Length: 226
Image (tube, rainbow, N blue to C red):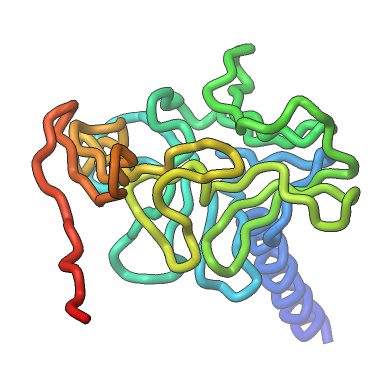
């Protein structure tokens, strides 16, 4: 009888440890002002369709302490990053904290200092009851309750080097932002590199690839005959 009790107790401990491990590693797909994403805990956000994951990472192949917040395809053999938040300001340890303020601003800070390594660019107006959610299309959005599902900020309007289905490319007439893709410095360094892909709005809009300020390639559509 005692042997059965011990076996049951061990199985119960295993089940509890699996549940705790799952809880610590994954925080659902939503971030609120009442919770934070901590690099030290290894917590991530996983889109409800299990296509994309958001969390802290070190660049593939990089033997360095640098830590970034990014989005990547979930559960594939070769890690493929599609968005990086703090490209210019990496953390040097695992003290990173991604949090959402009560006015709807995402902040990347360190538990070891007061430095803000990255923040989302939101409007000056506060967002009522904000939540940050990782969507199934790979877009990370900050939404408010009023008006309904008001999007105050989205990663689709702060692209890195990847364009995903549904992203808009070029100049946004509403916000005035010119949405370009900027290369990584190298395969193991997400710092903005020399190459930029965007839309040249001088005259007829054309797709251009620049190296610094020097045009290296352009796409020009061929007019169709009538």
